[in-house]
Image 1: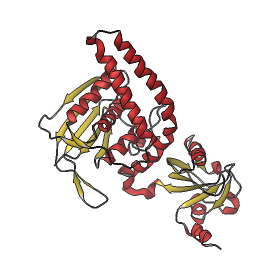
Image 2: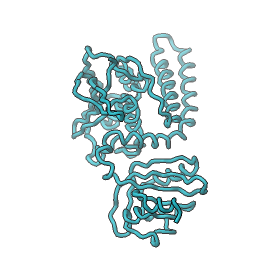
Image 3: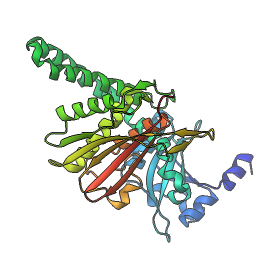
Image 4: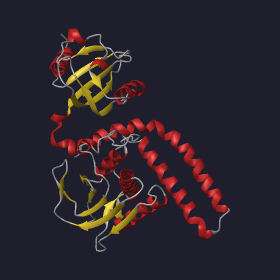
Length: 350
């Protein structure tokens, strides 16, 4: 037995190697135990006999093969011949030097502990947005046409009517910047932080929502004018608040109310990987009076591809989680029927 085979046999994580036709070529001991099957039974069978993830897992495997890049699927159902379904994360890794073969590692959600409600969604979001980068080029092309059309339209309008066309151009440019970020989502370069008035950022997001997708939904503001500046990337925080407001609007439907509240509370401290504590005294609450999050969804709302909407992609809140965590900040949600509050807690410039 080679060193690799010995390592494979002793790997404590359930692992499967599948071939070009998605049939199982290898099963380690952990996978045999996890799925309740023997390698003799599993070898040669299609992996779909044991894994379910709607279209996400097949798409992830195809993408891993095509781009030779690892993909993480946040939620997959795994089951054996005589075992019930268990929810787990699937890490899909192409095997270099072995054409079209893919390694799948299965990590049960229950083994992730409390981290799954904290920073763990960020790594999952990181991989999930990578799956969306293929769309970026196709989105940029029509955006260029929209920007050009808005600029052309402005030429025929009096200056007093330029607010809408200026907003179209401004938001189109910001979306292009966001798509650039999506294309380079694996880049861990820190945000371009500076002193930012959080109320200016919130007002920009609210204005864009009002002229865009908010419709007749009322957006109220309850700001603490004494708050100090935060230390943040203004453009990225606009994206965070826009995503949260849009999420609230979609939950409300045609009517309802969204409130934006800011306040100071010095009691929250985030423990960073270097063991130092980061104070997060400035808080932003975005609250809607909609039906609330389904109980099964609430714990995974920041995971990629998790959405309560039939046509939702489940990427907006995953991106929120990624951006907030890059700021050494914190995002959380509390939901009950009639009230859902997303809280962003931010550091200030000392």
